[in-house]
Image (cartoon, rainbow over all chains, first blue to last red; front, side):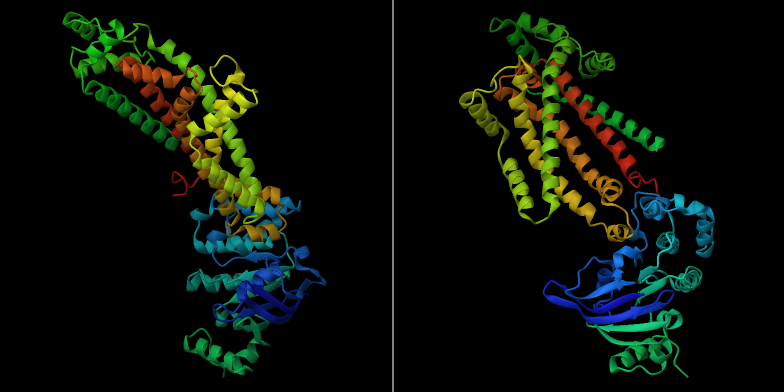
Length: 241
Length: 312
């Protein structure tokens, strides 16, 4: 289980995260939503260990998160890869470095689940579509069977049709693989449809953690109501009956 | 890849042909009477109109531009630079003697400069902004601010005059090349250090690297696969340019340290208006520049296949 316990993170003189606490169990999905600058990407960096908390702790099964080798799916699929190397190098880099064995059957299953042709891996990032690049990013994240996968705005660079399709593929693969998924997103509709819990961040603080149903029907805080109503007005979220 | 290298070679040949034509035309149309200059160089001040006309005929200066160009370019394709208008000797053997002094000096200077620059850049990037970084950048800036002729004189004063460890003038032994190579190399190190430093820092800031680290890829593999190739592209460009400019820079250093070489060869040839010798040096320099650029372009394509549009 991922446990974020009273974490505060400073960026320069300003406090980017203030006393943030939540937990995420294996096989579950937590969507972290909030406006730009709320601290969502800072949270990802802190979980990955790229930013050291000024206070609090972040653990996976009681140990530092880095020991569970968390995987990250980045927002911009093309900048997530070394542009000079074939995608296959990026996908298998960590597998080779950690001397893990990934059988053909697993690769075939993941490629099938992500609707990727294996030959596509021989191309460089610029030679595939952005949607394909993002799916290769997900393949790279999942190939070594991680317990925790962090998704940083995984759909925002994709068009609407590819967004819907990719979201479905992520959900299917999570069922099969059983990893815990922390998804940072602006898309409240996606969060409500696919997450087990939603955490709302505002100015570096957790405003509310609730189930998607509670968030859609009866948000506790005024800010969450404003967020929900804005999403309904933009058509990103269906009005609750 | 092969077709793009073929394109590069074709372009290099066009550049060389253009350079050969421009060199010949510029010398041909230079102000003054070349026959007079050659006659003066050969016979001192005792020249009459008959002597000048004889020299004009011997040097092929009386047959018109295009016939003279054709007569020059044909043998040039087989590296036959003709005979000196002044001494009458073949140009190529004398040129090769000059090259045998200048090239080793230039390459020794480059090797020393690159080694020092790599060392300083690695020290500087160990902790960017730290005291070692500031010292390394300061040393590089100081090196860039010191002109080669002054640095050469300082090195002579220290190592030849005060300490008497190394010879100052001439080219008799390998020890004679140390101070000139240091003079050239420190200039190279100064300009390369800052470029290598900023290239390494830029390569380390690539957005995909933090996630790769967290997935368990060791630093050595990240350095080999992601940082070094990215940082190498601008560094190779500069090393190539430095290599070409070192051959020019060696001219001044040769004069300071009293060494024979291309510098002395070229200055003597220009003073005597010895067309075949001047043309030989210019064509050789152009050939070097074009070859170095060609090699750099091919290396680019190996390091980063996007260059040359291989992803298109």
